[in-house]
Image (spheres, rainbow, N blue to C red):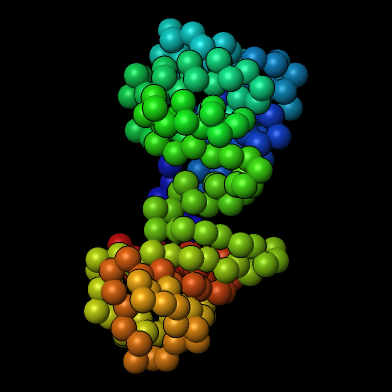
Length: 222
């Protein structure tokens, strides 16, 4: 559920990187894919906005590709931990606004955190499609696709909705989606009533079509 179109650079176009890239493109974003393997780059060139074969551990190469202008850099390198760490450092140094990196192990993840990576992803726990939705929507905490069209999403309640009741939002009448639960600090409200009031940092569990939830987020969560 994207609020605005963004530009992503994905370094490493293996299973995870290519899955993530495909979904970001489906969501309407621009994606530059970088991989050493020319055959992989050729396969993805018709899918992504741009795809290039390049050495991601070379600072001048990354600089020449203009990576500092991208909103988010994703290090999705497969089995070369040294290249993963060095690429993450270079993306941070070159001024990429947000850097996300795939970790192969807990130790690898801790190293990535130490060097300032904004988010560490473990492929065993985070599928590429789910991560794509989370990256482009700051209020989206979790995302489960029930079918091609229907989704359950967890959205954090922003400050602008603090004190609003579900009746004030009226999501079913206005957007066609439903808030089926509210996770509050003192417990979860299942099937909340129209009089239940939201508090900043509550978590809304919403069900509806992808378009309905996207409209709700774009209109209500500003």
